[in-house]
Amino acid sequence: MARFSNKDIALDGSSLTIPCVLAVARREAGKAPKVTLAAKAKSRVANAFKYVSKVAHGDAAVYGINTGFGLLSNVRISLDKLEELQINLLRSHAAGVGDPLPKDVIRAALLLRANTLAKGYSGCSPELIKAIIALINNGITPWVPRKGSVGACGDLAPLAHMSLVLIGEGKAYYKGKLIPGGQALKAAGLKTYNLNPKEGLSLINGTQIMTAIAALTLHDSLELIRIADIAGAMSLEAFQGTDRAFHLHVHELRPHTGQIDVAKNLLKLAKGSKIKASHVDCDRVQDPYSFRCMPQVHGVSRDYIRHAVKTLEVEFNSSTDNPLVFLPKDLDGKGQHVDGGEIVSGGNFHGQYPAMTMDVVGIALSELANISDQRIQKLINPSMSKLPAFLTKDPGLNSGMMIVQVAAAALVSENKVLAHPASVDSIPTSADKEDHVSMGVMAARKANEILDNVRNVLAMEFLCATQGLEFHLPLKPGKGLNTAYDIIRTKVKPIDKDRAFHKDIESIAELIKKGTLLREVEQKIGVLH
Image: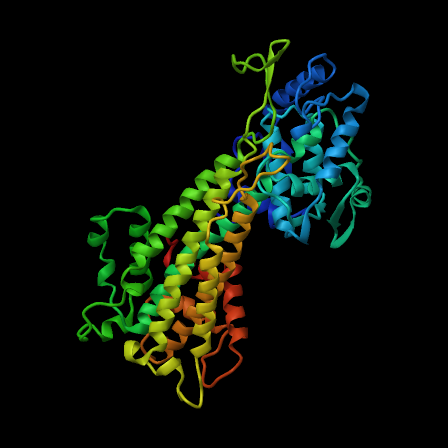
């Protein structure tokens, strides 16, 4: 997958992808692609807005347009109070707590929210979408606390915080400073937006916070699954294991895509290994499962993460608002008919799809760390690896990788707690009107935290594997693995005696996070599956 999309992005509600989201989220304004509202979307959006305006001025009480919200939906609101109704909605729902979400998450959420509105079923004006896009293009990033959403009527609290900036309230980051939302708009030369009927509700009804976190987590996960193959292959070389278990005929008899891809990667990475050639006649018959079963374990994680991308990209390009606005040409149904159209209350805001998806991603990622820790254990154990105890030249005086493995075990055990699915929980809210909720933001946040832990465990494995390779010199591993070794050695020197290893772990984790390690390996041997 491309790390970034470099093309300008015209939002049409139907074609947003993870590379597009990444390009906007992780690049500063001016360097990111310019975002616009696609011309083909404007007509649909404008017509739905006209229809909502007509309904707002009519006699019928229609939820979200001229009524209260939730349990208060039976309260009719007068025409002269409709803007105040929408403003009050944003203010009252901005009830989040905790540290702020990262800026890249909020930039992603702005893009995702603008895209779902661009689909044209929310009844907002084109100008509202353009106002959101203006925040993105001008580098205004709302301050949004990370806790307070149950993922029921969407991510109400965090989206309310995000949306307050449009009306000149809340807080936002602008040119490196956190300032009042109105001040940020003024500094960027933008005007505050005056909400039309239903527009406050359209801003906060949806899954865009959970999907923003998910989008960035999935991109990083797609890179990390390849990094796991590199780490595992390097450990296998240090362990002097065999790659016979990766013979493609074995995996074609159980033809899961991920399993076959991992086997191909492992063979590709080890190609040309002098270490492998040195022990072809050794007395080992089979390697431990953590080496032999890498295709089976890494592979299923790969398949579920890839499936998650498909699910989330459907979510990116869906109408997750409520109620939804259908024009006369859309369908025949049993809604509230006003001049041939319909306003239909449904449940597309419910976050169960992204919630359950990210729970599965968390489990898939956790297993990468679980098996990595087992490979570390084999490398530091002289009875298993035939290498010096704890991979140190003078064991006893030096403890070597002893506590590196303990730290890996701590992260693996933490992941086992974090991997418990959030989506199996539910708690009634809003006076029991919203009686089943998804916990989608929690599921996405947990998956992202697991991702960080896995990255660090793999960094620890690289630290051990590169040290293990030192004991095989002058023999070298396969070309791809030797490239990874050389890149790591630019930041982390061979270990002659004990030192504070946390700095080494951080340096390797940074090489992984920035994409440097994967990029250099793939430039040398070709793109991994």
